[in-house]
Amino acid sequence: MFSSGHFEERAETISAQSAGGGDDLLAGTMEVRYQNVLSRTSALLAEKHPARRADLWSIMPKFVEAVELTDVLSRLSVVHVAGTKGKGSTCAMTESILRSSGYSTGLFTSPHLCDVRERIRVDGKMVEKAVFVEAAEWCLDRCGLVAGGLPFFRFMTLVAFKVFEIVGVEAVVLEVGLGGRLDATNIIPKPVVCGVTPLGYDHMDVLGSTLREIAAEKAGIFKVGARALTVPQLPEAMESLTSRSQEIDNELVVVDPLESYLNHKDVKDFHNLGGFQQNNASLAIALAREWETRSLVAGENASRKHRLDSLAAGRIPGDYVNGLRDFDWPGRAQIVQDSGRVHRNLTFCLDGAHTIESMEACGSWFATHAHRSGVSKNILLFYCMKARDPHDLLFSLGKALRTHQVDVHSAIFAPINSSKTSLLWSQNGSKSVEDLMEQRIQRDAWAKVQTTLKCEQLSDMSVTDRGPSTLSNTESVLPSLDAALLAVRNFADVNAKHDVRVLVTGSLYLVGDFLKLLGRAPK
Image (cartoon, rainbow, N blue to C red; front, side, top):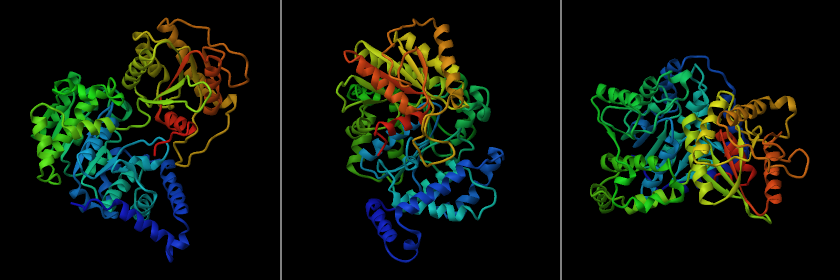
């Protein structure tokens, strides 16, 4: 296995080289090299790949060979996680638990919120620019020699593996990007353990139209000799997972719920483990336990033995408790207080939910927070990608809010700043009325949802006219996120005697852009 504990030393070495003489001086400063890498990588985002996923998958080994990672992948000690809901959160929890237990860790997730380097974390921190540049340049220079083209996500997967080789990590936690069977992360030949989070209907044009088909794609990550763990699933999904595990004569285990641990109260009240996250936490505990039990990297030591003995006795070990307490997953069930203003009555509740199931969970989470805080005026800030049906998403959210008796006093629909075809973020100016067609469609969808659910229309959102950033209607289309932020701040000032809560949801792109505007981008 790779040596551990050399991350900072390696990063300093690379930084020193970039500031030295020779070719690096010709290439310019590290920042120039970094921007050049972003530009070259953005070109991959813009490229279209008409080939079938199966064809793209078939050439993946050639790219692995080109970047000289074939042997590396066989040595990585991997936790591999697929699913529809909560796979990113589960991966982040698992990594945090293992890091709290003393292991050096690598985490690969997607998408990113603000900075592409968020996808690759080493020991809980976003990969250093110098290391990212070295890994990305290595891959870019060699992948260009392979015929067939390389989609962005598959390229980023290779960069992550190269980073983990450079810095040396003991445990790697990989989140599947899409599906599982044909996902780039599935190039890993021998994971230590595989996990599947709750399954639902998503990416049906790619994965299949039935839950059985979708589950079969997710189960494609199962490997001989690596136990598969999952949470309770709908019968149709469980049948597919079981069928795949039987095909390869492997064991599929439904993990124990959080409540089954004798000391579950030690973690249930953590602010970052509300509602649906407790399901993810139970899977993360089981994944970390399985990795510690089976990984050759873990070795034999008193601390590991104590943790495994505690788990065998039905207790969550202290290191695992600490990992769950410190788990941080920006943009998912995140609370941000709009501090630094005269009236501190404005709170942003951000969640990157973008599926029917996750929108329902988001609504329940927001309702819990709203009820806990007493009477408040609630605003929805929504955006979804073109590929999503806004009515389906908003209906799921609206139904959850209505079930929990939470009113939305106003809904705002505004375009995002970021682009799916570039990694270079720009704070766009206001869009014209003609450019806001998507937002008007989403607004109309919300109005239809309100009618369908017979939600009570409230008129107390009307405020003094302050120009284009004034919230004067139940549903508002605004030309930019800057205008939306100004609008809710104006409203909070006018209603200084009330708590104002803004639910920002529908897309991780929206949440990432909004965190940047708030000056709260992930570090």
